[in-house]
Length: 64
Image (cartoon, rainbow, N blue to C red; front, side, top):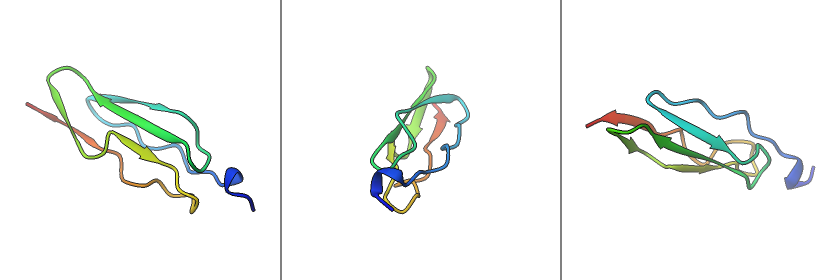
């Protein structure tokens, strides 16, 4: 199986924030951000790895 055919599952949504998914194939990424007055804790961008897993867990949005 070629790396471009490996797919990750749709990453989780986060509370008090949003995401944009560039794709679910290996090498693609999901970008997260928090709503105003919340701070992002964790990785803002996670990448789909060749194993079919994301490079990190989705971040969290924490109230200030």
